[in-house]
Amino acid sequence: MKNYESFIRKKKAKIAIALGYDKEKNSAPQILASGHNLIAEKIIKEAEKHSIHIEQNNELAELLSIVEVNQYIPPEAYEAVAQILTYIYDRKKDV
Image (cartoon, rainbow, N blue to C red; front, side, top):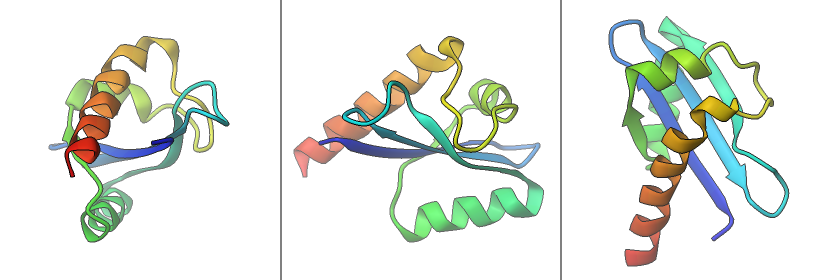
């Protein structure tokens, strides 16, 4: 399994971040989309429409919201994002 996608959102501020990771092409996960309020809602609806995992993590959403789209996540987010991607990978293995 080489492609992983996840969305991380913050409840109150309506922040949504879309992540993607292709371990064969990228050195770290990338921000695929990021938005606040209405854009965040659109990102979340797309994730739901495609049955993509949605993670509620306020602190991580705040951290990743400052990263530009198409940029890699910062090193301080590696551990949290790795846990999310591991969870997704494990779920896909069981299917």
